[in-house]
Image 1: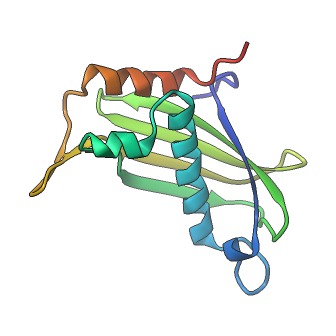
Image 2: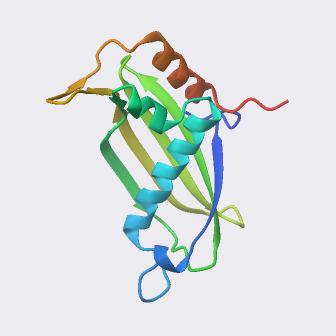
Length: 147
């Protein structure tokens, strides 16, 4: 996951609702930003998460490793650079860097995800991904394609 041409980017602004009483970005807000970055990347490859969910599939988080390095503060712009990798045919890993405007890494996260099938009475791990979903996840891994 080291190539720079397969990174998905999203620019966010640290707003008052993202901070604690001292104006520093609250730790839980990082999770919101991570989810927004993943949903945005899915949208860019042609699959809205709501559409996926309507078809009975979800992509829940199964693990998170988050390392805070430099505090982000109210009003600050932050660039999320995310890379995806499909591993073991069913696990999707998303590595995200939170970059300050000067390029310093404020935080880094590694998020593990899987695809599940949700029915009225159960949630089951999808061990054999439907072709369309697998292709979408592979597009995430390839990264954005710009002309």
